[in-house]
Picture 1 (tube, rainbow, N blue to C red):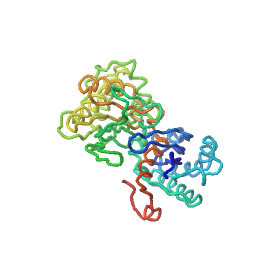
Picture 2 (cartoon, rainbow, N blue to C red):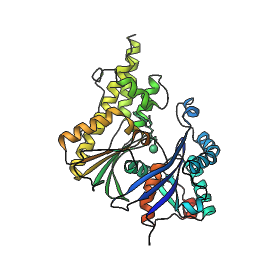
Picture 3 (spheres, helix red, strand yellow):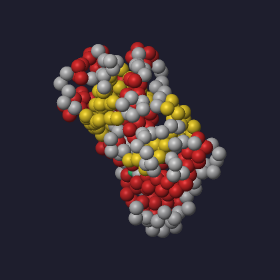
Picture 4 (tube, rainbow, N blue to C red):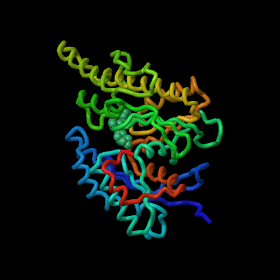
Length: 359
Ligand code: KG4
Ligand code: ZN
């Protein structure tokens, strides 16, 4: 007889957060339900802020230093004294991400799986951002029934490294139908924040400043908003902000940073929302999932909910809990649950043989 619930320890080191979580899952594919027993994130933001972005080898060194500490804290928080008896699997982010950083997590997961004689699960980082919405405290809008996510579902994933529209026919069946041709949405936020001498990461700073600015002050371009495909491009928008700032400086005009921030945020959100709406229509998606660090943006959340509710009320909207939008390991544990159900275990030696981890 299959166990009622599964307990998974998950590791995430794809960028600048050393994260380990323990999640308890039950309900199978039809009614997946999760409990987060521990969710520890050691952020390296302060370390990388000096450089204005993540330095891969510094991140690697920090992960190696942090992993044993974070592991001990996660097990303690989850009240697990005998991991080999309490856990059912070890999951790890296998890509995409910064190569040196990823391997620290993979090596740690492999060692733990061998030590405790447990199966290992390789999870795609973006898949993790999708499954953040099945974790507790996520918000559901347009809730007409108690049914969980209905398929086909569409995910708008907006992070520091990616901007993607993903069609989900079922759990584990993911097709990227659109992505950015240059900068990711989060990257654009970070770069514009740098131009305005705000801190790193820039997203939260821009978002805070934008609340008091005028969204119409600068008519920044909306790249690819009308193209038929579902791809994005944010580098032209970033350059438009740069040129506007240069012009204002040349004219010795007062630069109202809040107006730049608000107009920029408005342009990004406009493109993301319009393209997502069209993708929902064309794919007949019954659910919309928002994921990735930029999904913490309150203006994006409010806008997408308003516009989908207005024009596509049949589509349910799933928003991750704000604290689970940025990188964490609980979302990796949630994604791993579906792989465990299908017994999709990793062969550690094969994983190590791959030159690149872009899944
Ligand atoms: O998903 P994430 O934690 O890491 C990656 O997988 O890349 O996303 C980090 C990104 C950063 O670019 C950060 O500036 C952005 O998410 N971000 C935000 C907000 N909070 C984080 N962007 C806009 N508004 C926010 N409130
Ligand atoms: Zn991420």
